[in-house]
Image (tube, rainbow, N blue to C red; front, side, top):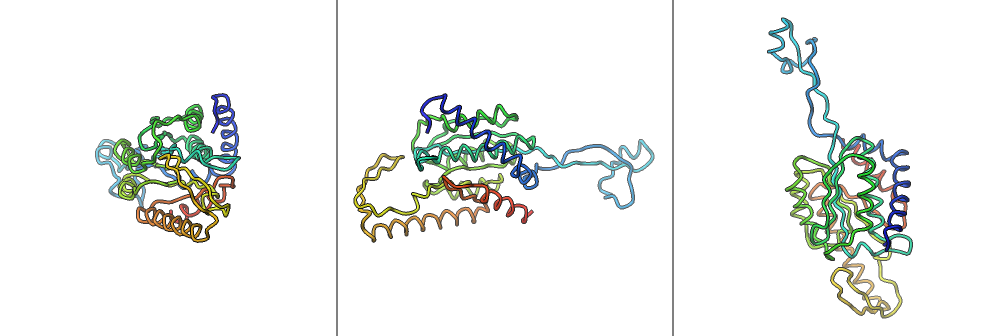
Length: 293
């Protein structure tokens, strides 16, 4: 994490340059082809032609003109994108080059610039175990830059993670069906009920950020670990093969449960790891969405 505003602004600029380039080169086109606006809008009238749908005839206009006229509609293109970004204490974890918080800002920027490039509105919800910040959906690059800055510079009041609370807030407060991108490591109490409800009301996508060092305990003997969200300390003998195996068993069990929750709610997940190129995971996600469409 950056400690000063000037350092944050440098990171914002760097993230802007990286993500804008990716959006222009590839992701922007994939975003446009996969995510559609909701419903249709009336466009104009035109004369009826053989093969047109009879139900589209406007009888009032037909009576005035003395010839059948039909109503033309166009797809409503604009979409509302809501970024729900977890800024709890565990997001500050990561390798020397990049924390999970910084990766979250980069992923949020990618979707934000894709949305703006596509003339969509984008908003932001920062959350921990409480709501930290809510920015209403708007258009424009300046708004995107503020979103990145808020993620990087957030000084949360809460330390824990309540994904269910965040999903419930968006379910209750977004007035129309939206694209909800949840960016988190998803290390949180059970949120499957809220996820299921949110996915009925909105199109929910989970961006799951992890760090390679979380995947297995190193064999380095006794170490003291601290839970960043609760402050709890624990002495662990990593030199014990049984301890390392138990850690991996529990992590595998947690991961399987998380994937089952996503599948049950029909939520697409994009697995992202700090320090690694995330573009293949994004392209795979868009390819899956396109094939279903």
